[in-house]
Image (cartoon, rainbow, N blue to C red; front, side, top):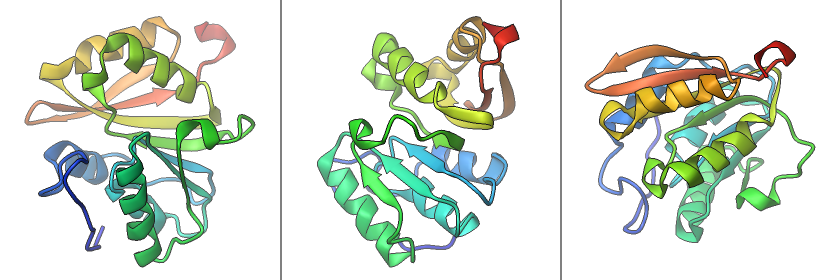
Length: 178
């Protein structure tokens, strides 16, 4: 990705692109050219902007609960040529939308119950061949999260590990995995 992004205090990693997000964008497979695509917990938008550049015609959604983060993400997407992307709160995404791919550096520090609820909701919205790519630090529970996802019926594989950051690929639940 080649873009200059605006950021600010009050959003995750305001001073520079964090290593985990950089690792996710360098390691995870590029998104399908047809979407919709989702940046879950978009922050100021580095993942959303990259997805928009890699799949310029795919419908793109960026969700967050932080109003300042959404404002910055909107500005960064507009500047990158993706004014058509939807930047919104999670509840504003129509429930019938199914995602071809989800990319996220999830907010691990919200705690396991909230994280599990959030991931359960969004992973349940993967399209039939959809995949999610998550970056999680080993010291913040990447391996236990992968076990939990597998136990819940979402086939999960570690694609990469670098400097303690795991890239997890999560597949849609199938009838056999329930």
